[in-house]
Amino acid sequence: MFNNAIVRTPAPTLVQGITSAPELGVPDYEKALSQHQQYIKALEACGVQVRVLEKDDQYPDSCFVEDVAVCTRAFAMVTNPGAATRKGEERDLPQILGDYYENIEKIQAPGTLEGGDVMMVKDHYYIGLSDRTNREGAEQFITALEKYGMTGSVIEMEEMLHLKTGLAYLEDNILLVAGEFRQREEFRSFIRVEIPEDEGYAANCIRVNDYVIVPEGFDKTRKLIEAAGLKVKTVDTSEYRKLDGGLSCLSLRF
Ligand code: CIR
Image 1 (cartoon, rainbow, N blue to C red):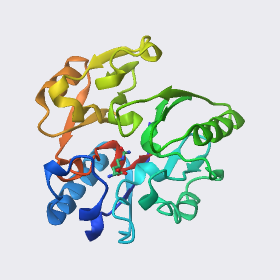
Image 2: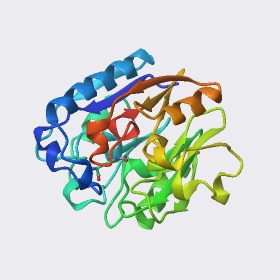
Image 3: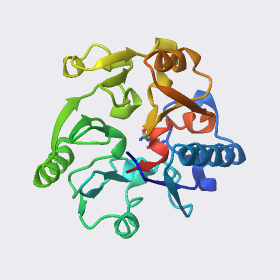
């Protein structure tokens, strides 16, 4: 059960955010703001209290607040982002998370970790080793998890930006899998829902209490999730997609 979410209003510098898909075009800032409002409404409709952080123009990717912290049941981990232009984006998170958590930990350099590479399955955390998250960062996180009675394991990655670019745990043992994660041994014990190749972006869904929020316009994926017995809400994230961002990236949920 999630009671809280933290989001950060996109800054006008959003248009300079990191992208691996420049062919999708530059995000329309006004449209991104309105999609952000819809996202907040959807989270609220799922029963969470949403805290909206001030925009931070110094960091074009700062609306992707998932990457700067990992919120567990016992502690919050403030990360050290691996992307050069995102280093420092986490600077006000210890104070903000201090309103919710007694225990705050921090990934220390040379360790790097971005929250998009962390997938929670009850008290176990899968950590993707990506261009953004290194082994040292993953080990620091696993050490912290063990200190609080939880566990973690690493997943080698080759193609995706973040672990949750291609995976979403929807509770009830249901796991959405796309691309390089479709046939992985590590996920055999889950009920796996394979995302069709032409809808790969839609693997980045979020389960928030009674609903799964799915990006708008990915009907095959929506139907597969409904067929698995889950209730769906959709939100249009077209402007964030242009920066490789999706539904999970836009909030911290705890
Ligand atoms: C980046 O490359 O860092 C941003 N443009 C997108 C971050 C997406 N975050 C996520 O998947 N958790």
